[in-house]
Amino acid sequence: MEGTNLSRLRWRCRRGMRELDVVLQRYLDQRYALAPEAEQRAFESLLDAQDPVLLDYLIGRDHPQDPQQANVIARLAHAGT
Image (cartoon, rainbow, N blue to C red; front, side, top):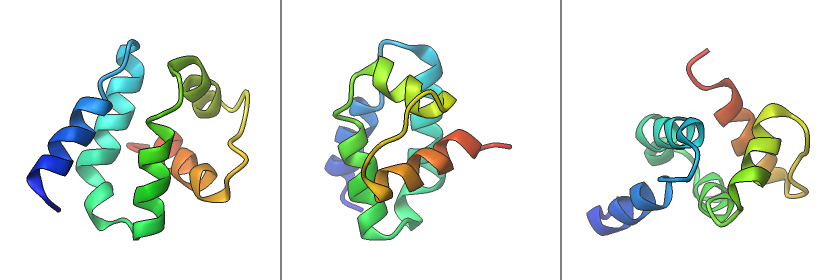
């Protein structure tokens, strides 16, 4: 992965909620580079969502319509368990 792209993604993982920072950063560090391209794109598109939407996804209050995004959310929600 190109360093500037990783740096840009790392910056985009910084959110207004510390809990989201931790979960998104963990995924970026542990999974992103190994993920298929479609999963990487889904992760990147999730970073466009507002914090309350992402939190709702992670706690299961809501679900993304896109199946690839739903797959990433499942990985995020279960990361580190």
